[in-house]
Length: 141
Image 1: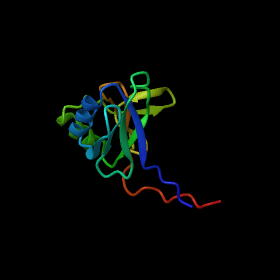
Image 2 (image 1 turned 135 degrees about the horizontal axis):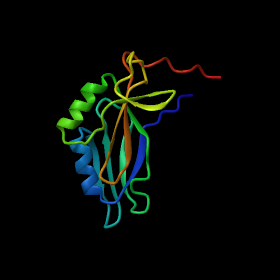
Image 3 (image 1 turned 120 degrees about the vertical axis):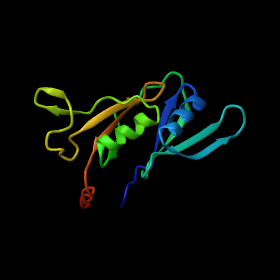
Image 4 (image 1 turned 180 degrees about the vertical axis):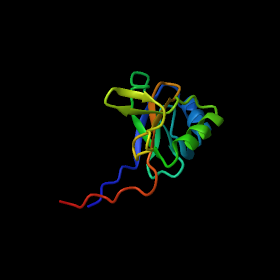
């Protein structure tokens, strides 16, 4: 039995502002559907991803999601792309025994280098570098 995560709901305070941010960041618009005054579905997919995000208006929870990861093959290229699109992205960093450290992972180890950015509501995203092919799925128990 496969369990595929294909959609994450991102609470936002302003759907149009969030939609514009994610489109500017390169996410593909899949759906923008309204049904009446209070119902709207806006779904966008990051480039190359099988998992999309749906923007949901929720003032109380806007910005509450933190640590959403976008896996990239080349952190520097992804960061440059987002910066070119007007997204504020942190400098690269990695983790050592002493905690978060500036710069790329010294060996460019898979899952070792990061950069971060936030949407207008403060939803926290991490770019995480995984060079090469993804690992094989774990066998079923």
